[in-house]
Image (tube, rainbow, N blue to C red):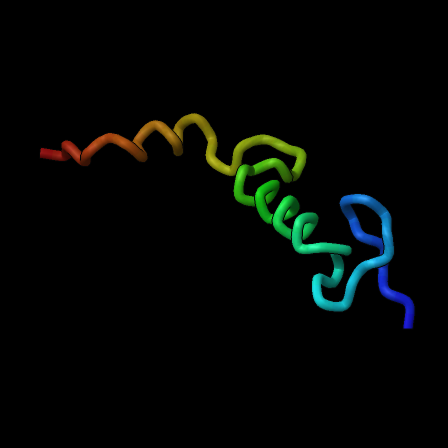
Length: 61
């Protein structure tokens, strides 16, 4: 069975770190996700009107 290529370097993946070739490349990919390095194209999910009230307390008195 042929393992896919590592998405970081293109080398064959190692079963222990599948789909990556090493722990280093697995961790590098995780840091990309955590640091918001991977993003989908498009605008914000919230419009300007929706985002305005998120940080403000409700003052409906």
